[in-house]
Length: 234
Ligand code: SF4
Ligand code: SF4
Image (cartoon, rainbow, N blue to C red; front, side, top):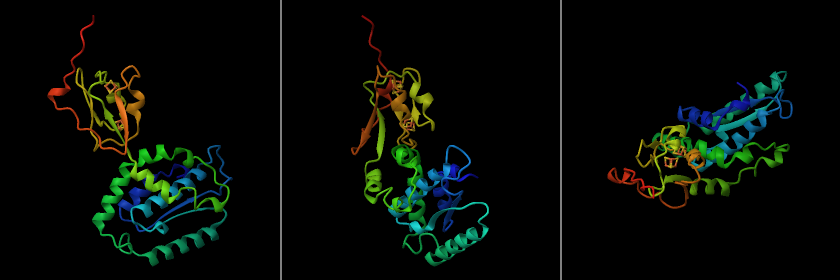
């Protein structure tokens, strides 16, 4: 498939399935036949994924991106041979990094859950067009990746404000909101992928969804507290 279709989730899933290395190949930068120039996106995505791999303790050299034309068969062979040698030198996933299989699996599952959040937070940089290789190293910095993971957002429905209109429940892409008629809605934090759709969907006159950064999410209301008591009209 086109390198522009490669997603962070695909890369993480490949590692979660046990591969030792992932290679992303695309057409030469600036020579895409489509106005979208998705290969720049693939480049950004790989640069981001490399930082994320390092953040969870995996060797970022396990992931490589290269761009070439269909007529560069020799170059393709050289690049793939070199990458294969690199992966053989590094060794099996997790082993050379001193991580056991469980730790690797847990880390990859945790990061995979955050993919929608990461893509929203890094949207601007993911759509950039880097023209020089000198820009690659610092496009995503270690500091911003630390911050990304240290300040993961959560969404919380304020039981005092929720009017059980059910809009957020219908819009949530992963059914993470429990609700119903006259039931104060509650977000399942384990299932939530932090896409922020509920924050945008909640009507401003209710403003019941809070975005929380850096502090724990308050406990949800008890089942008894979830029965909505509507104020009588004057
Ligand atoms: S942020 Fe809101 S809409 Fe998005 S997954 Fe979480 S609960 Fe659902
Ligand atoms: S959209 Fe807002 S008011 Fe409506 S159910 Fe969701 S949180 Fe409650």
